[in-house]
Length: 203
Length: 311
Image (cartoon, rainbow over all chains, first blue to last red; front, side):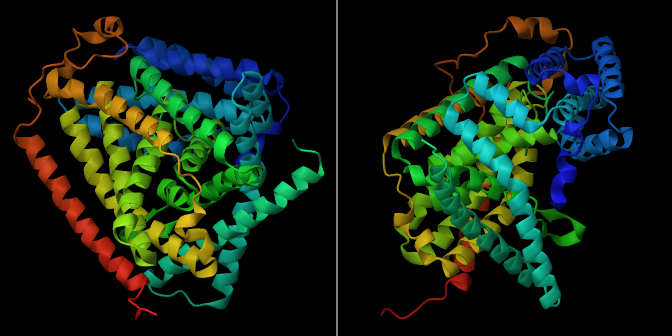
């Protein structure tokens, strides 16, 4: 499994990791809603939240480099939206405030995601009466997305080892046919999974 | 166009949360009633497929790259309700596992990409592929609908940013729509190419009979949700803040905004004051772009599906 790095830290052991998933989900939601509510220009609330979140990050024992990389990765989208604020009068202050606020929300979500295994979050959703069909879909998705990512990488490697890199238009068609194959394989796999689920007494 | 946390205010987050949840609720109900049990695992696998597909980058000029969003592709292959569930699942996993797209913006993202983009795009796909039959028609429809879904979703996104008073309507709309009119070309192209690739290997998967969902009622509900969204996110600008630039008045601040009703009622008798010079220019540019893209989609479909002699 090559893609485990996406989800590597959520199964560590620390005081934060050991907290119940429901508490963490509720706390993250509360923090994000609070940050969303903070009126424009009220920097002091953001500073408070930042201190709290940094303390939790330290307590959770997540590698700082990893957290910063995750933040920077998502920051692209934040800045992409926030940059529109620069086009208005007094834009710079608004821009900075939006980026700070959004980064803190991001840090909250990064902490939640990397201290809580996704399966436990699913259990919380199930307990919170999220419709069973949606929870089933989410769990199957979580189970198979790494498998499909691996599969798409294998197809890509197979293609690269057999062909020269063509022109741009060719490479688009090649990638699209990888996606088409991936879809077909997913739907065939879904049929096999249905058989396996029935054999194990599903429904 | 995943909206991160912090860009939507509380009232917009709540309103879009309700709209998104309602849309997913309708889709789940529809799937429970009409999806045969052996296709239930397909929901999860299709969601995993979209997730994996979004990781495959398509090179664009200048070292940048784009990827598929997939709403129209899934809707064309598996039906609009499946597409709503699939896109919602992808967004939920991206939000909870990778902090990609905000938690308070989850409803807005599901509404924009799943309902406006997915179902709206599917409606366009259906209309065009009905009007122009055959595989050619479906490829043309997929390319055009892929583009439309991206642009429509970005317009909805601009409306939510503006109603949150994060960015003025007059800045958000041209910026978001303009950028996504370019990004949408990639989405349309990939959607059409993948549809052709699937059709070449398994023609039965792209035949019109592949989509079993025929009921009309959920479409009315989706349409109603989209209309409600437009009423909430677009109409206040036609009446209250035609410019959106007065927003920086700090004195108004949050205190007043917080007391404002959660759902700003559209003024009943507004007389389209939003249509001034720049709005007209934006609309004209949008219309011209749509025509051009339809023409491009036609050419693309001709290239991918060469005309054959009737058998």
